[in-house]
Amino acid sequence: MTVTAVTKDPEARTMTMTAEFSAAVDAVWQLWADPRKLEQWWGPPTWPATFVEHDLAPGAEVTYYMTGPDGSKAHGWWRIVGVDAPRFMRFEDGFGLDDGTPNPDMPVMVMQLELRPSDGGGTTMTLETAFPSVEAMEQILAMGMDEGLAQAMGQMDALLG
Image (cartoon, rainbow, N blue to C red):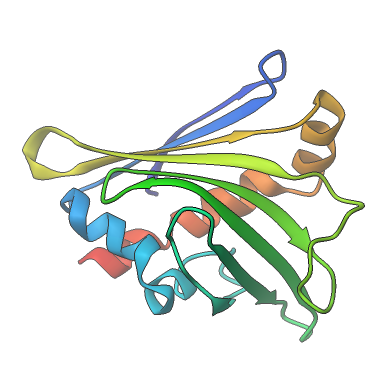
């Protein structure tokens, strides 16, 4: 399993996942930067993702949907806030309606990705999710975000090497 730590801090309204990879930072960044590679790991194994729009420039949007085992689709979107490739990305993350537009009834989270070289030429990846409220954090975690994201990140190793 790639994920080495999951820290939930309700007081700060954050969840932080840390993962270790034997690959270099540039290779791990490509799993985010290339939509075809991102499709192979974003989402739990039984809910593969399809990226419709993918532009990691600040101000740009990313749209995608995940397809469940029964064929149902769950839409999502990112709004890119900042990027310092290949080490950092900050983006808003939200749920989409069936047409892919943002779902106003669901909370919007802010995710911050950091990639750092680790000993031996590998990479430490930290993904922090900030929730708008404790209630939103509880709602999203009750939907299984932590388990789903850990499963998704667990698929990254196979793509690196």
